[in-house]
Length: 74
Image (cartoon, rainbow, N blue to C red):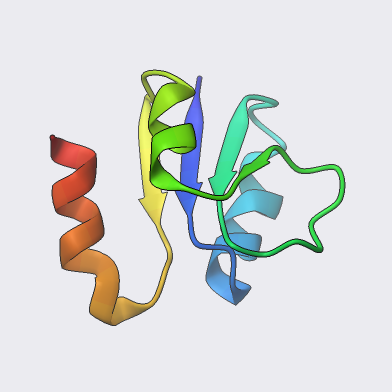
């Protein structure tokens, strides 16, 4: 299963910790530069280029959810 996580604050990190038990194919979209040992991309184009995801968790700032979901659906 290929999983995407958009945003890596406390909620994104919690989802990542829980999901890595079930899948090693997790890509995180985050501006953070301190994430070691995690497959991270830092912009939408790189995230989108990583391929078709089976599921995407939107865990960025709540005010950005609607825009992010629209991007995921196109």
